[in-house]
Image (cartoon, rainbow, N blue to C red; front, side, top):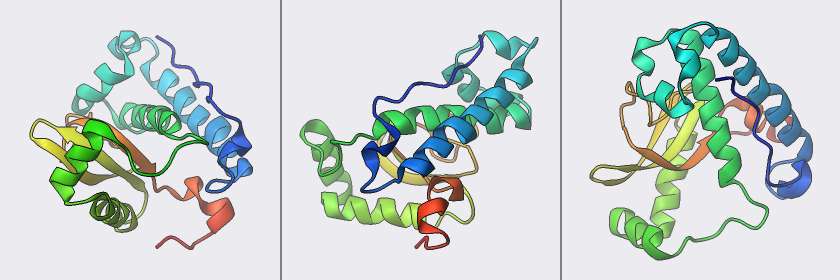
Amino acid sequence: MSFKLPALDYAYDALESSIDARTMEIHHTKHHQAYINNLNNAIKDTPWENKTIEEIMATISTAGSAIRNNGGGHYNHSIFWKMLSPNGGGQPGGDLLEAINSTFGSFEQFKEAFSKAAATRFGSGWAWLVKTKTGLVVTSTPNQDNPLMDVAEVKGTPILALDVWEHAYYLHYQNRRP
């Protein structure tokens, strides 16, 4: 299986109030594409070549660092783009809000916990809201690791992801990371 860059459901300038168009374009067409190119090269002519990205993540401890880093980069960015929307933001509703309130006390307290996970991730990585076997958890992972990986400290299904690598914000915000 050869992985491909997923198309975005919105224009690069659609998130301008939060993420500028130039950052989006470079992030998507250069950074994400590089993860895909490197992943495809790393899995070529190996047993990994016929696996889905989720199958690769689930058994990442048996892969080399090129597959781990680039596979994680591809998976993480693919779900990140889907979580962004020009009409998004604000408080969720339904079962998710109920689970957030039950776990964190309120949506505001969840936002504080999520922001803290992102801001305190030393170096590069990701902040996550994860559905685990026991409920919701806020966590962060280094580099391109994610909660689907068998090596993750907190394992589960990502519900929300935030890229805290410098390439995700540096053109607009420079070094002003909290």
